[in-house]
Image 1 (cartoon, helix red, strand yellow):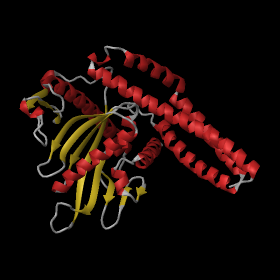
Image 2 (tube, rainbow, N blue to C red):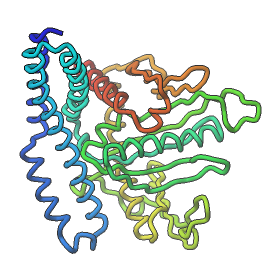
Image 3 (cartoon, helix red, strand yellow):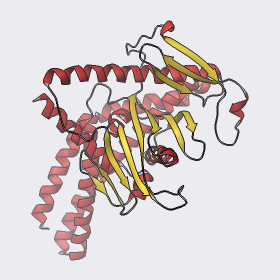
Length: 372
């Protein structure tokens, strides 16, 4: 690659980084980090555990995002120096190293740029993720647990706190369902593209004859609501059931009726929480999830009405949006974006950023097309 090409690419990256910095509003981000740092240092912070988790989680996420931006900016500055040195010394090895770093930087900046596409009403919120096993018996339950691990590993990679609200274990292996929150800015906007039906094809480890099995799991993603959100639930519209928590190994939570199930009678929406020690804590957490799901239901109804007015009829695969194939070949492919990876194990270990970025760009494109 010629020096002029390097210069052109670097100038383009610098312009993109400037735009990203403006959208992220770095000055406001640094100010919020300083304010949150003061709150974390307060001796009474953990008197209110819910608020403490919110404060520490947002601080960690903001610090991560700022460090990510500043690290990329530093690498971009260093690259400019590397280009000059390689040109002055006419060093082929240095030029090759510079080209490799440029390709890495282009990819990293593109990944960060996706954040600027998250401008929806609730995109900046934290996320509540629910996973439910579908058709496929024990393989589907095992698949649901694999997906939960995939998302929690992704969160760990990004240093995002995860709060598990409810896990319902299947009898033989895996999960019937699970609900958990990812406490990070823009977690909802980022993960909302994961909603839908996921399909796994593999040789079943639970089949003595070693036959190939297809199984399904459903993923639901809703935003965490804030006190200013208008979701009013009359007390008479909710049935409250309490029961003993369940889980493998006979944990101490099984000894009292602390688990709570809320049923919203008008819609039939059911949520449960069993991971807190007290019934009151579980009820409060369950109400957070219920409100988030009712908001998502309201938005879905509004969208359906708009689609009906537009005459929006499309041929589709239904809700199925991604295939995870482990046999007869190895591949994970998104059916909406056509993005695919030939290393399913890496995906199940939380390397899903490529799918998230492709999904966000696909969604933005679909929204623009619908608007036109």
